[in-house]
Length: 238
Length: 238
DNA sequence: TGAGCTATGTTCTATAGCGCACACAAGACC
DNA sequence: GGTCTTGTGTGCGCTATAGAACATAGCTCA
Image 1 (cartoon, rainbow over the protein chains, first blue to last red):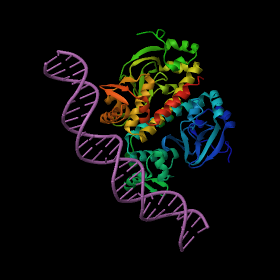
Image 2: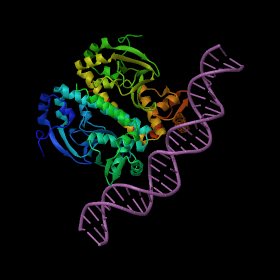
Image 3: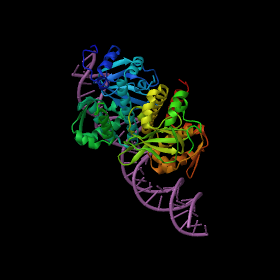
Image 4: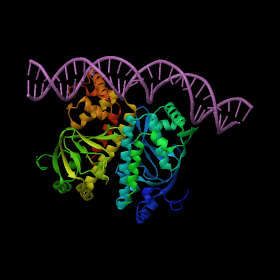
């Protein structure tokens, strides 16, 4: 596996930290490959590592009693997986699952606790992201309450497109159903609706967004709400 | 209105801060009366004050396009209203509404930013609460997805009971419907169900919990999940 | 004491999504 | 080239909740 210094750091929390802080962090960072469906941390167990995704994508899921789960947040290169650590807490309430494979920089949770004290800038970036994540989770709560599957699925596809910067990616109905917290059949039906309208094409685990504008119109406003929050927060670089 | 020093501070974030930090904060604190349905901050506008509730109770609501809202979090004496400020952000994504009248200590947002840097202990308390709030919001997201109105209503009543430490409190069907993001009729029906089972009594804006154990059984597991998180986090004092 | 407002209760129709069961189709693997 | 696995599509009955409209009961205030 490539060392941290060989490949350009794509994670924006790290990229936005001052060079000297980043250099101090470097010895603690390790580049890892994350593969589809890999679990980064389980709910209510100690977080060993935090992850700064480069081109990977991680879903944060909340579970309820009977093994049902629903995605509440999605973390890509703009964030960090392990926000509780940032807040001084070593357990996550979430199940963190790799939803799109790729690389990430990882670091021991204990190292982050030590180092973030020394780097105000990194800490500020982490807090900024924590705020965004909280807003995203809250919007998802309302979205789950009010919007129908087709809208939520459109939102999900668009959000994922934004995070991975690609109009085509792999996701099965089954997996997507878990993310949205619905039956697999619910996804099949919603996908059928969107396909009939020529907004997407979907075949054996590969989705392609054909008409992003149309898909945005089919999605609920939650997509735009969260997207705007993210771009506001990221635009003014300090 | 009574000065801050006259009445005992009931807010636990403040109470748990070291005395010397608290004394430094005191000049910036002001005790205020909060009345039912008062708005503390609007979404996407600058947060002027943060609030440390004493015996008051504040709902955090997220709205979607067409003026519909749903409660995503509930803050009482264990917390602070204005978590984004804690994270260095001066806008809240939430609508903060007083759900149970009472008093709170309030402080200018800018003062909190300045002072929290000087008080590591206060900051730590605020972060601890931020983590709890995030977990609560995430649980609500999943709860909204999976649980029926009766369960969610039972959860809400129990949570409120815990926060206000009383088995009777005032809330109309209409108001509760907004919190749960359902029709008023939905609340009327769910209330009827719970009343038939002798778990609560409900009359013209006053609910009484008659059988807390039975009501817990009628509620979804989300109640216990969040309650346990809170008591874990609050039990080990540092 | 009666008018008016606020809070609650009832009913009807429509629909999204559930659970379940089964059919089919495209690759993968021997 | 056939069999097995994985991923999709379809159909059926059922329930929770939405939307809308209307009825009534208790409280307040003139």
